[in-house]
Image 1 (tube, rainbow, N blue to C red):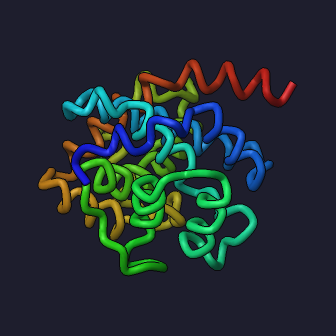
Image 2: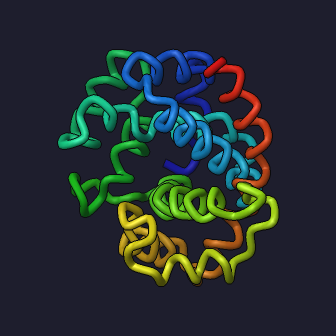
Length: 202
């Protein structure tokens, strides 16, 4: 599982975006998908997997492919949708594994899968914290600000703290390290995503 680049080379980013839009129309879901894509690509470079950057990004882009139409079967419908769309088994395994201990028993194995598991919910919490700031941005976000919101149980309650902490443990990281890295990852793609979404919704 450690070198998956070759098996997914034919599945382009353009194809991944096309496939995502077949099952997702809500701008909120599309923006989340783009955010996780950008975060995953940043992590690929940060952790020494630069050669697999597009693959990591495609996994991020498609990780919630079934959520909008099949929220009660999240990560259960995804394999069929992805196979129909031409995705390879490595990508399918990665996408499904982020539902580990929630809807599936497929455990994250590759470093990329552990990053997805750890960062997915966290991006939602960080973004929820960002949009109530005067800047409405992660560019001036600090770890301590996220931690304050993190400890408030009813803030972004849909973002599972248990999953975030389980993911950090899988990676062998302290929670603060995961938060710090994910803020940096979100900074790397925020402006690009905002510009794209503004054009997309125009």
